[in-house]
Image (cartoon, rainbow, N blue to C red):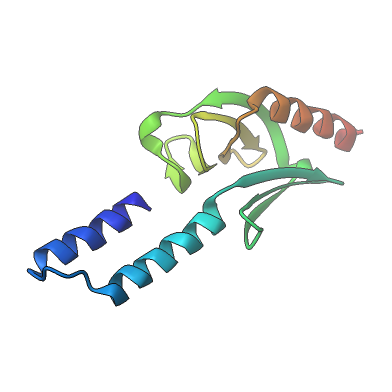
Amino acid sequence: MLACLASVVNAWRDSGSEEPNVAVLSVAFVVLAILAVLFGTLTAVIRDDTLEIRFGPGPIRKRFSLRDIESCQAVRNHWYWGWGIRLTPHGWLYNVSGLDAVEIRMKTGKKYRIGTDVPRKLETAILESLRTVGT
């Protein structure tokens, strides 16, 4: 988001105009506000036999069947992997802040990392759910 704002400011400076283009700045502000709402939080919920993660109010989400998860463990991400949804050397990363995450390994071999402020708590919740689904 900061990169988007910096690009708008640089474009305004490069235009040679002394006054900012209010329309461009307004559009940039609206886009940044929407992105902040959509990607401002990441929630992980375990219901029945599904682990669901969702950004913001929920239109951007991913579901994992607990039956397809082989294992999970708390991990630490590199700072340069950033935030948002991105592909890393350890699979897809879903993150909004910080470096802590829980890596889930699927039975297919695919791996995903879910960013969290409470990695041990999420790891424990997933492991307990895996035990109850497996019985």
